[in-house]
Length: 297
Image: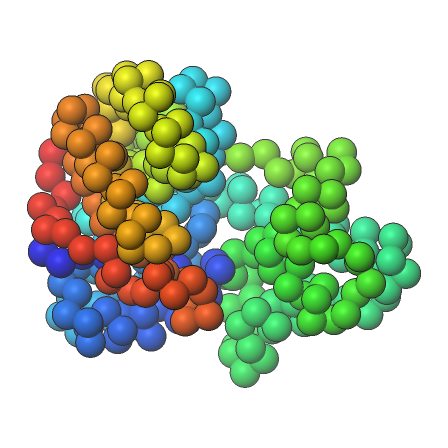
């Protein structure tokens, strides 16, 4: 099946709503899709309704930003729930959504004090992200991120003096209060809960672990492979073939991890990591193609 199992909607950091993404996938002839918003399932019901109407296979899913003190993986975890049950995973991840919202609240307070800028409001931040013509009940369902804070400050012309988002991220959020709120879910806990829900855990964009340095990947190939084998025994189901920053780069990097997946007896998924038309040109919906074999034990 032609699949795109990794993209994002306005419920996290995408530019489109779930039904709009499904319509794009339908026009491109994609047969199976998964909405993988960051640390939230809020867009799943809209997404599944749209895939049903379009007669496309839709998989409830999530992308989890984790910490890993066991194997040292530095990536994100994709959880897929083809049976539609994700209750245990949802309960675990929900607490981190609350922390995300607290980080945004604290960010606005800090900006008011540090930059002497007092016209800041979380409702306005959310509306700058999704528009102001959507019902208020959606406000509590939107996953807020640090880039949302930065974009809001830029739009409001807050005099923060940071050169770019990376500079902002590295220097604005280093207070003790932010560090305490930035606690992330643990890799093995996520895998355990995904499996208890009957789901499938997949390691996203593995080349980012190595900053896409092919020489580094090849140098550490065997060590990384052994870690993947151990993670498989703990419940990891697959590894992702990802879009990265260009088709040529993706082809080169994915070839290495495709070989590694076979050697580790891990399954393979395909994902564009599409956020919107304003994102990297290579990351178009369905840009990473392959014959997905389905979610099977």
